[in-house]
Image (cartoon, rainbow, N blue to C red; front, side):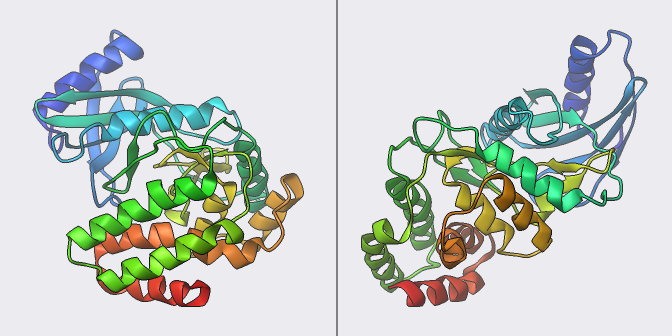
Length: 295
């Protein structure tokens, strides 16, 4: 079939026959724009439509296995709509993920309020430690999740330092940036409040929030781990696209800690460093501006 590598076509056909119906037939595939890492699109079959995406397994080992685990973990909370995972596998150097196809509709009148309340419910799912029992990805970058009982320690060692090391190795950052971050680390225990871990989406920008067939919020492309819930909330403010009613509804369901808005930029150092490593040094200006405020 045009567009899908033959090895993937055959493996997906077999997977669908095992998971859905022994008589299912793949009819058509059409690419959907939007991803910069994967190939993906709508797979039409005799039994309905699915979303299929794939990439080079050697470039991003275990990416879709980790994403499938994250989607299932989010879905298990029954807090917010998450696409169903149909299957994940590899075929001749490719890896692929097959999901429920979300036929997007217009937003309901209560869309932002529902999203706020549902995210608050998700964040009430907790754990003994910050982190996760496996690593995953944020964008195309590996995200390590070694567990820690301290949020500040986890944030420093598993989030900021990992991205800084990568930026240094790529020649995107200078030693002066490391020194400024070292100074910040000393202050972080007094700047960031400790709170029990929350299950996070982990990459909560507006592009990863879509609308399901019933006009309700739906989350895609997670980078799941247990972290401070303010991380998810801060990222919703980084690139815009979230209605003010969203945070108001969240606060009513799970009250924000005092002075949350003063900590937003600190949390967003992580996604900004991720953007430095993915898209280049132009994002360093925002990073340096935040450091200047706190160091």
